[in-house]
Image (cartoon, rainbow, N blue to C red; front, side, top):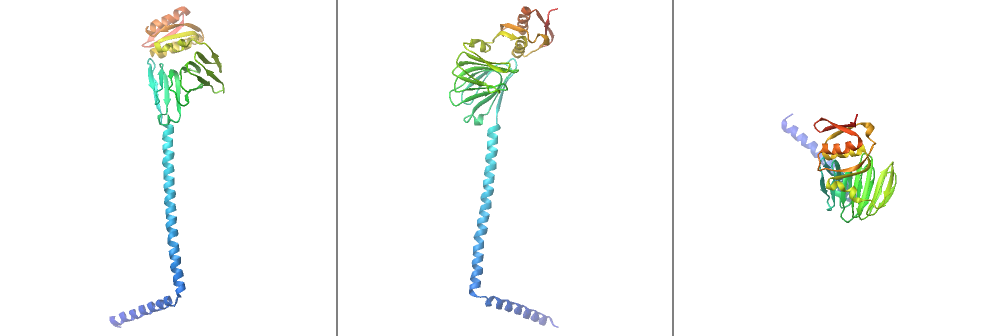
Length: 286
């Protein structure tokens, strides 16, 4: 068979297929054709709507993810101010409130949410001068203090918690749901797990450290030694048997650490020895 005939035969088969298909299509009614077209038209918007809904859901999820992330940053971002042993410093908060920090104290606050919540975490000793405004909260391991606008002193160290109000009004709260309200010249102190309120307290004693003067009235010797360590950035080893012996006097930081140790030890029949640079040992006189 020639190539021409093969090609002609192939064309005949193709024409037959086309005409047969054409016959089927033309035999469909006009109503069927319009119904098919209408179904195709109706199906297309559904796909578009579905796509738009998917996009909206993804965008919404992305926005929520970003907002949650921002909220996490705002809630956790904080600034820490450390006042080292032997130092004193003043920290200024976003609203202009100030905290004069005694040696070896730590202050933490959250600047990004300060306008929503004025709250600080504090350990050590500090004098707070709070600007008027919304509630101001100072939290520590041993209790919390809330004010609106006032000045007060906080001592929060080694399970000891003392708050002295100088101006305004202060509310002191402990973890045992004890609450007292302090007015000027009121002092609250945690003693054996209970808050004890003292009225007409000599507030100058509580803030004497601001003038580098330290007043002790019947305080355990361990507490006095700890304060000397903080103020002079030294290490003082105290015979454990002397920890609870009471000391009542005062001293000024203008003197050297050895002069202060001598001043504390002699009235109590104690002695100190210098073991090496900035390390001392206090014991009873033999």
